[in-house]
Structures are given as C-alpha cells and as structure tokens.
Image (cartoon, rainbow, N blue to C red):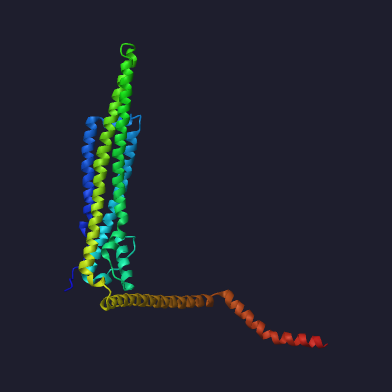
Length: 328
C-alpha cells in the first residue's frame, strides 16, 4: 500500500556529515593549539630554516580546504537524496525528475530513467559505484595528502638528525681548540634535534590524524549516501528496475501527466496573453480618443482645415482660367 508521507521541509539528518566534520575540526585543532603552546611549535615554525614545516602546513591547509568543500557538497547531496527518497516513497522512480543543479543523486536517477526508457535492465550497484567514484577519489586525495605530510615529517626527521650529527662532529672537532666553534656546533646540533622532533610531531598530528580523519568522514558519508540511494531504489522503485510492460505503462503515464502539466501552463500563459492584449486594446482606444479630443481643440488644425476647404473651392476656377489662357 502506498504511503502518503511527503517531505515538507529539509531533512535535518542531512547535516550529520557537516556537523561531524566541524566537531572534529574544532576539537582536534583546540587540542593541537594547546599542545603547540606548551611545546612552542609556532616559534619553531617561524624560525625553521629548512622550510619543511612550512610545506607541511601548506599541504594541511590545502587538504582542509578540499575536505571542507567536499563536506559542503556532500551535505547538499544528502538534502537532495532525502527528498528523492520521499518522492520515490509516494510515486516510485517515475515520480522523480531531475531539477538541475549538478547533483550526483539526480544524475544517478537520470541514468536509471535513461536505461528504463530504452527498456534495459538496471544494475543499480554497478551504476551507483560509477556515479560516486569521483567522490571517493576526492576523499582518497585528502588521505593521500595526509600520508604525504607524514612522509615530509620523516624527511624532516632525517634532515634534522643529519644536522645534529654534523653539529656534534664540528663540536667534537673544536673541543679544547676553539670555545666559540664548540658552542656553535652544539647549537647546530640542538637545532637539528628540534627539526627532527618538530617535523615528526607536526606531520604526524596534522597529516596522520587530522587529515586522515577528515578523509574518513567524507568517505563514510559517500558510502552512506550510496546506501541511501540504493535502498530507496530497491525498496521503493524495484518495479521500475526490470524491463516489463507495466514499467512502460507507468513511464507513459508519467509522461502524459507531465504533458498535461505543460498544457495547463500553456493555457495559463495564453489566458494571461489574452488579458494583456485586451488591456493594450483598451489603452490604444483611450489614447485615440484623447488624441482626437486634443485635435478638435487645436486652433492650428481648425485653420488648416479652413484653408484646405478654400483651396478645394477655388481650384476649379483657377484650373478654368489656366485652361482659357492656354487656348489664347
């Protein structure tokens, strides 16, 4: 038995992905800020001569921007997906038509309509994997940036240890010879140790934890969106997914209803056009009457009419005189 449930407002469940992303971003960045203040991370980043931490921070900002954009796009997809679920619940697949906007769920439904119009067999699992593959790749790219940040942190560790070994070697070579070189070598060694530890910390926390979790949130959202669309099709539109005469009849009925709606809109447009033409005709008649009244009261027009009548009255006489003179 068909349900009469209609979605009258935006389904707030669509905000779960965005809310989870914001909650994780705020909590994790707050903890990282507290750790950074105690470990004096910002001061090290400012004076990092190797620029490894700068590269890590740049990749982190890029990854966060991409992940936030992806999350907002998925949130819009969830809103539209819940609306499509409501339409399928009441009218089946034939009651869902694309409204534009570039939504992936609309493209998925349009593909199913196209297959149905050609009387083909719909493989919903394969189709939904193809349609949402780009979203999975975007989530994986954010995870790839996180892995790359960890690698940069390890490179910074190796670089820092190399600087440390060189500094210690210089300090040992200056032992008992030059006190200034000894202190400079020890300072270089400590700076190298700082590079080794800080780059590992920043790369591991920002890339290995924050970006990877962002990637997991969006990837899980894409999987949930696929499950919602697939369940809606299998439960509420299963009869529209197999080639049959009944499916063709429903598709024809939906087309006829759409045509009737178009005809009604055309009739409304024609009625509005007739009303506008009637008003225009009334305005033209009124304008003609006003111009006639103005012309009747115009003295110049009266004088011109008198001259015209006089010219018509004297014209035969003038023509007769001219004719007589021509004979003479």
